[in-house]
Image (cartoon, helix red, strand yellow):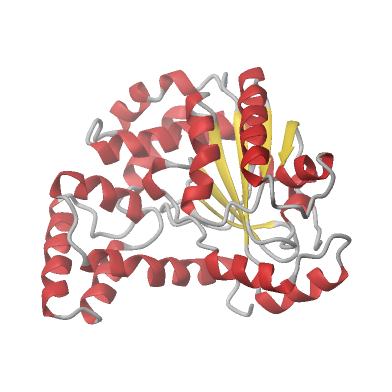
Length: 317
């Protein structure tokens, strides 16, 4: 709406993430979790919000987390920026000639930093050497309710070599609305995804992928094939979805759409290292915000769509 995608997404990430700071968390994994969380939100703001809304027991968890974040140097503004800027400079023109490879290098450096394997841009350069050549497949994983415009966006992406859509597999069995064989359809889809990634190129995974569990199935296949994973999250408000659903060729029953909206839990940037970067698609069918790319400045995204997102075009179905 009036706020625009970048601001709306950041507010939503703050609102969604701060409760996790009020719960106990294994100290051995805390630094890595905080580094990943910093890709989505300013940790100083996030801890302040968590502390202001916590009860006395929860506040102890928040205060301990804040101490750990401060000790790790993560409470300042844009704590990952020196690492990102240093790596980007070292990669030279790679961000222009092969933005996919540059984004992959940054994502791998970020994760290595989270695990404590590297601490400087020089170490990041050495740790990401193998991904510079771009000799790996790509997966674009669509995320969003039915009718949000996932397929319209994906069909206009350049350079796609394979397209795996669960609705198409259902249609081939007789009806795209028949949910009775969902388990078999999913297995067939994942097998096709695996084969397509093994062949190389860019593969689109077209499914609602509403929850982390659903996204994880295709993500596991992509990890086995060492694929660059881009999550394309389509965010359209409920009134617009209902309007589109009433006029689309294959409408979804309203209770089903309502259930999808209730279950939809968009991924957070940097969430557990499951995706290398995230695109946020608006109602107009174009990338309106990004996170995780090497051009994303302070790490919280700058709305700069690039790579495979360029020229995605418009669409509202």
